[in-house]
Amino acid sequence: METMVQRFIRYVRINTRSDEHSTTVPSTQSQVDFAKQVLVPDLEAIGVDHVMYNKENGFVIGTINANTDEPAPSIGFIAHMDTADYNADNINPRIIEHYDGTDICLNEEKGIYSRISDFPNLTNYIGKSLIVTDGLTLLGGDDKAGICEIMEALRYIKEHPEIKHGKIMCAFGPDEEIGIGADRFDVSQFPVDYAYTIDSESIGHLEYETFNAASGTVILKGISVHPGAAKDIMINCSKLAMEFDAMLPGAAVPEHTSGREGFFMLTSMDTQIDTGTMNYIIRDHDKQLFEAKKTFFTQAARSLNDRYGREVCEVIVKDQYYNMYEVIKDHMECVEVAKAAMVKAGITPICAPIRGGTDGSKISFMGIPTPNIFTGVENLHGRHEFACIDDMEKAVEVIINIVNIDK
Ligand SMILES: [Zn+2]
Image (tube, rainbow, N blue to C red; front, side):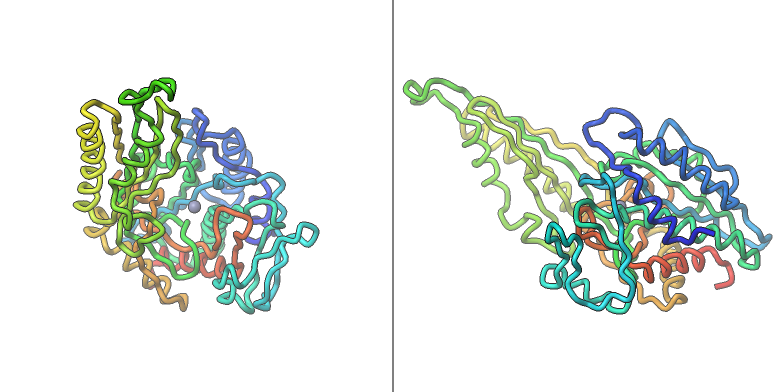
């Protein structure tokens, strides 16, 4: 029988990178193939019922029915199958047993190391077993670790009918990394009381506060003439861009904020003399401060237009997702159940607001409170990503404890 680690290694070798420039759903054919040719048959082999692939949204969904007449909540577990925007061709994972706490050589030939001086978090894993990359790709533990942990828990539950539980559902979706996978999630196909994404990082993490998030686009409108004849005529969009950015609070940027402090972040810009675009993201945990930041952003544009006495810029602000705590605060049992499940597994829960969003940010606002639980994977989205086998096994134990009505 294939172990969870063997399954994980089989899955991460399959390239399921998403593509933000694609217009298809899912964004890449590799995710469709992975869903239909791997996840569906593997869930069926475990004995999960009603396994289906929804081609409208790219989600694979399965159910294990309740095995008790006692009242029990129906609980969902969600993970994403795509990997981040980083090389995912020929992923070649390697297991390090009983890690000794020294620098890890990922690729001897190319001299690529995960060094303790760069990643002091590695020292938390001394004595544990890790899965690392060959330094040329990401690992894809984000979020195939989540998928494998859910599947391993479902397999265990099917094999141990003495564990009494309510209805359990699983959903594996596409395109989380490009921020759109959950937009088409169909809650009518996922009738549960609450759910968890298994998509956080190191052991103990339990997250139920995310950012409120918006994108802000600035369209700059300049005037280009020959520099020799430019006096009192030229309006240079590169200069406009600097003026606009200077109006935003300089301390409210990601590199100078932490905890619940929000920010504006200039993610990219492209300017010529007469045209230009700036792309920002706007983030805050607090709804009022979030609204204030969006207003401030719009006011900066108005102020710049006033300065020039003409429309030199236009802004487009679009909400992306909201802080799931707005929903979860009225359904705190899902948090309490997860905390108790961790304590039962000997884990101290770590609950901190995350400086980002999850699929659960959107799914919570669709009506299913959905906190986020650790996977045991760290240093995501690059060559230094690693998964801790011991902590992956703990995530499985937490999932089983969550559904076990015998608390
Ligand atoms: Zn993820």
